[in-house]
Amino acid sequence: MCIFIAMKSRIYTGLFLLLFLACQAPIQIVVPEPIHKEAIIDSTQVNNPDPEVPDNPDITDEPQVPEDAILVTNPYMEKYLEEVHYKEGDFSYSSILSYPGGGPGEADIPPTITLSWPEGASGALNLHLDEGEWSRDYSLKAGATSLDVTNLVPNQRYIYNVTTADGVEVARDTFYTKGHLHQIYFTKKVRNGRDLGGWKTYDGKTVSYRKLYRGGKPSDNYIDAAGRKEALAQGIKAELCLRTDCESEKKNPPFGAGIDLFGPGFEHGYSTMLKEGDKVKQCFEFVVKCMREDKPVFFHCSIGSDRTGTMSILLLGALGVPEPDVCKDYELSYFAPEDWSMTNGVCNRVRTYKNRYLDAINYLLKFGTGNFRDHVESYLLSIGVAQKDIDEFRTLVLK
Image (cartoon, rainbow, N blue to C red; front, side, top):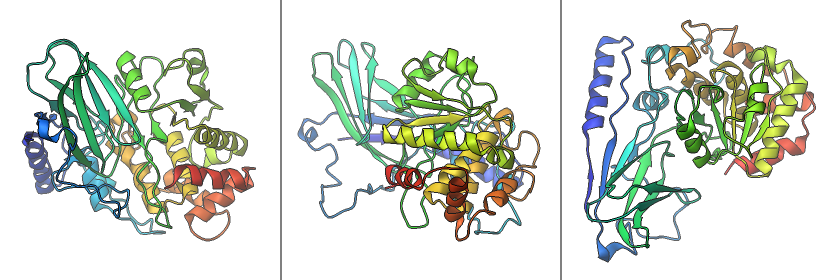
């Protein structure tokens, strides 16, 4: 089997990062060109698409990611996530403003991988992409020899095969992904989208992917048919609206009919939002209900930063993700364009400023004792959330 991965986008990315390091000033972010992955069918390998990684019952469920795995986190976000390590309880500094982002940036858009195969098949084709617990089918026009795919989960093994309408296999191949973040982008303007999966907890567990999604509003003119199709393909089956007025969403569900939708409405985020205990309780219980029913939920406000960021603090905190990483998830909104960024043209919302993010953290730290998970749990209990709901939430989301 021959596999070719074009390095053009990686070279361009490297040049931009070198320029940033040399100038120590923000630069405009350019969306990486698609990475090219070409598959050529080898009839001797059809039943063993990845002979270099043999099955081994003794290894863990974690995929063994090879060095040539494809980065599916935007490289600007990846650099921040790789390099920044905050200390618990140290709010004396924030590193996010040292990285290029905000303004006209496009770093909230994940990279695209181009899958290709030889010419020769006639008629319409189907490409089946399999991640293990998740899969997707793409219908292709006659004569197609490539497909662009995006919104992929990092550190996974993907298998794809291309077949004709009568089931004849045209190509099959395997590739691996890497990165720190599962980003999602739903055209045309649903920005700041990402999965809460992948973060580690105090006790070494991992937040599962494809269960909790956050982002900017998908309503009105912010999503089109292609974006809606992509969202549903990611598995989204419920929506939690944190905007002041969610009536437009209820009248015209942005993800289509059949999607569970709840929207109590919040005027502001951070400690102001946390003080609206009854509404927060309803939101948390809605999320737990979605997890029980195996319905991945997309929660959002308008730009996916303040009220959405506050809900992320609660959900990640309740799961046991340490506050420094909760902060990193929050600060990732900096990489969205300015209108969606958590800085929004100013710098009063980063880790060191008391009137925004730290205001919410300090409010939660008033409840209970122990680590950040214990404080968040004590807060949730104080507003009437049942202990069994908190425990079940962790059981359903953590692995």
